[in-house]
Length: 429
Image (cartoon, rainbow, N blue to C red; front, side):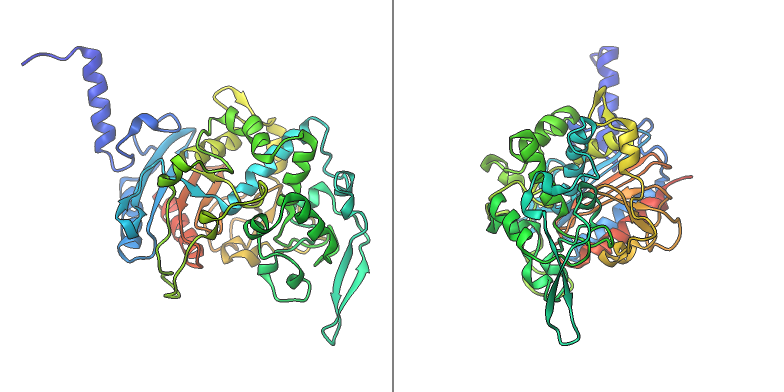
C-alpha cells in the first residue's frame, strides 16, 4: 500500500475528524471562524447530543422545518451545523449556506453602522432627528380620553438619535396594539418598506401622533428604520451600500444584503406551510415582495456563517481578524443599558424571556441574572427576528449563538427559550 506524505495524512485525518463530527456540516472548508480544538471545546458531549436531539425532535414533530446553528466560544467555532429542511414542502435539505430573512436582527446592524457615523462626530446621540428630517420638528403625542377620543398634545421633548436606537421615540408598530394611535401606523418595518418609498415613509410617520412622549417609555417600533434613512442622508447612498462599506466588507459577510439576487433565491429557507400552533397556513410575505427602500428595521438577508462573524466582531470589541468596525469603548457603550429609572421599561412585553433586561443601542441588555425565563449572565446582549432567527452574545462566557430558522408564528418564542436552555445546559462550566 502506498504511503501518504505526512502532510497529506494530517490533512486527511483532520478532515475525517471534522466530517465525522456531529458538530460540523459536511463542507468544513467554508467554516466562518477558526475551528475549536478539540471540537466542542467548553461543551459536554452529553450536552451536545441534547442539542442535536432537540432539533431532531422539533423537526420530526413538525414544529420547525429546519435550522442552521452556529456557536462560537472564545473566538473559535464550536458548532456549525444544518438541521432538517431548507424547503420541507419540496424535500430540500438544509445547508449551512442557506439564506434567511433577518427581520429585526437587521436592527443590530443598522445600529452598528449608525455608530460608525457617531464615531466620526457626524451623528451625536443627543441631537434631534429633525436636524436631518425636519418633518419631525413639531411632533404631537396622542392621548385617548375616557370616551375613546384621540387628542393631540404637543410633544415636550424632541425625538433624539438615542431615542431611535433605544426605542424611546414613540414611533410605534401598528401591529403591536389596537389603540387609536396604533391604527395610524403601518403594521411593521417590512410591510412599510413594501408600501412606501423612504420619503413617503418619513412623511407618513411624521404626520402620525406619537404613542409616548419621546424619552419616557421603551416601545418597540420604527426607530431603526428612521435611523437608517438618516444614515442614507449623511452618506448620500442607500443603507445597503453604507453597511457594505462600513460593516459587511470589513467583517467578511458576502451573503448579507438587502437585495437578494435571483441566483441566490434557491438558497432561501422556507417555513412550514402550516403554523404548528394554530394549524393555519403561514408564509413569509417579504420572500415574494419587493421593498421600496432598505429598511433598517427588518429587511436584510443573511446566513448563519455571516451573522456569527458579525456577532464575534461585537464580542471582540468591534474588530475581527485585524479589521475594525467600531472602537471597543463604543461597543461597550452600545451594549450597556440606556434605560434610566425614569424611562418605563416595556422590554419584557416583547416576550417572557426579556424580563430582567434593559436596552442599549439596538440590543436588549441583561441587567439581572434572575427574573428572565431564559438563562444567561449580566451583560449578555441580544435581539431576534420575527421570522424565527435568533442571536445573542454572552461576554462572560465569551460565546456567540446564532440560530437561523424560519418560524413566523408564535412558536418562534418557544424556540428561543428552548434553544437557550439546551445551549447553556451543554456548557461544562
